[in-house]
Amino acid sequence: MTTPTLEKISTVPRNQLFSAAVIVASLGYFVDIYDLLLFSIVRVTSLQSLGLQGDEVTRGGIFLLNMQMLGLLLGGILWGILGDKKGRLYVLFGSIFMYSVANICNGFVSSIESYAFWRFIAGLGLAGELGAGITLVAELMPKEKRGYATTIIASVGISGAVVGHFVAELFDWRTAFFIGGGLGLSLLLLRIGVAESGMFGKIKEKAVQKGNFFSLFNKERFNKYMRCIIIGIPLWFVVGILITLSPEFGKALGVKGVVNAGAAVACCYGGLVLGDIASGLLSQYLKSRIKVVYTYLFLCMLTISAFFLLRDLSLPAFYVLCVVLGFSVGYWVIFMTIATEQFGTNIRATVTTTVPNFVRGSVIPLTLLLQYLKGVFNGNLLTAGIIVAALSLITAFWALFYMQETFHKELDYVED
Picture (spheres, helix red, strand yellow):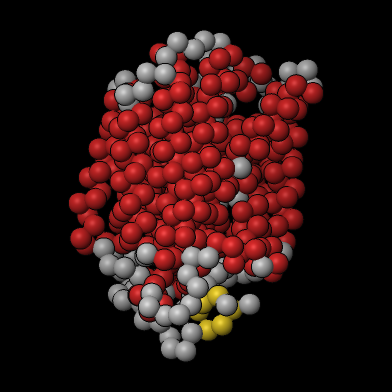
């Protein structure tokens, strides 16, 4: 249940697609993705340098990935609440500072325990930037241009994974972490040029509950909130399972050559950049978010099927498949915009920050289920992967069926 505010909330200069807010949010997300995926890129190399070998690398990698995702889950709630209580800018730059420092500290680790600790801290920091940036930009832009602005943020940000691959190829894994931290800290210099959301400013001093995470547990609100999360799970299944574990899947599929995880991540995210640009523009053309997500979920279903059915591919052909997989889940920008548009100003940052992090955090139950099913099917990774993929897609289609179209929705209201 929502109630409109008594006066229309002003929205400061809302007509500039390349405003300071859009630029900082885009670059912040660029470094966010660089750091988030850098671990996947250097997972094998970094763990081997710490003395792990064989199956220890896979088990250690999943453990570290889960620690990072746990940080994302907890950080999403923390930063989301602060975003609605303290402001979008507070979270935008606070989270950038935290993940930048954690990035640098990752370059100094000497044991898997210290590595796990700093991946957890990095996860906490990474949890805040995207939600705060999307919320800020969505509130500054008119509804006709929100899709273009969020498309810019997503396409610039996701390219951070591609850059991460090339940095990891050119430099030692520790240096790659140092570079990410330096890039993030340099963004703090842009803080002075970014204005706070006018919508947040209007409700800041009003007697309305702000950032109450537990208010989302109202039945109607909770159902809407969960649907926002579930439609994004296939995307993170592809990135967090198929691509992160691409060396293991490549071996199981009989790929002719050793799959490089960094190259697979770069190819996937190259496809994601193209997919996000296409989905954002298609949404503007169709004036619909829901139709675009349906389109991409069907495409995702086809490409995941191809991933498991095509055997004995050459290494270049496998990397092309990674590009296509990335494109097929290139609805991240639409998914984020839908979450932002579903809720009122007093709870919007909490939702927009927690939803993507719960999706990212879904890799924890996904990997646990994958490992369990692998054991059930006598070590058959492919059968386990197919079952997890099917569950992810079926639940996403179910959630999308009940989603409300939000393309034309005004955002100047608060939740009861």
